[in-house]
Structure formats: C-alpha cells, structure tokens
Length: 137
Image (cartoon, rainbow, N blue to C red; front, side):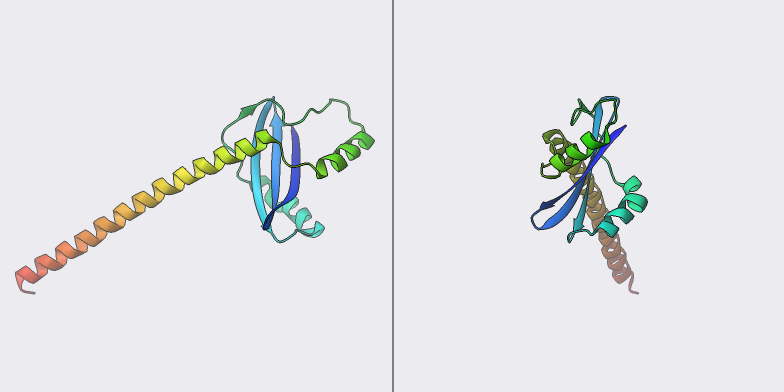
C-alpha cells in the first residue's frame, strides 16, 4: 500500500489530503485543519486520528503517482520536496468531489426524514389538543 499525505493551503483553511493506493485502486480522504498546523499537531494527527479519516467509498482505478518497488531514501526525499509544491492530483480531487456529493445526498435524505417526522409529531399534538377541546377537558 502506498499512501501520500499532503498538507496545503486552500483559502482560508489548511487542508490535509490523503491519497492511498492499494492493488491499483486509489482512495482519497480530506481533513480540514483550520489554522496552519504545527509539526506537533501533524504528528498527533498522524498517530491518533489518521486511521479514523473518512475515506472515499468509491474506488478509482489507476495510480495517483508512479512509485517504484525499490526504495531509495535520497530519491524519496527529492520526490517529497518536489511534491510539497504540487497540488493534489486531479484523480484525488475527483474522488473528493464524489465523496462530498455522496455525503451531501446522505445528509439531505436524513434531514428530509427528520423534517417529516417533526411535522408528523406536531400534527399529532394538534390533533390531540383538538380532540381534548371537543371533549370539554
């Protein structure tokens, strides 16, 4: 599994984007930090909250970036420096967009159901009140 975590500034917040590739499938997660995170905050995030990031449920074929099987620390450091200035990949942006629209649809369905239940509850209260007035209580 190859994972890349990128922290970048998206006006007005600092955002972390996790791109992970496993068996040729790309999944993406996004976390909004707010103010610029310090190194200690990033370390705590990686240790304690990184595993609980909500990842995209849709799976995208193809790699975000090419990675070789051989590990060369100097090359990895150069690639990290090069990637630090680069925005997240377009596949990652598409995955985030799809995940956000999916979450929006879920929230809308939940809100619609809550509104319907609340309207039904208020109707029942009005009906009971009307019945009690007609009964003379």
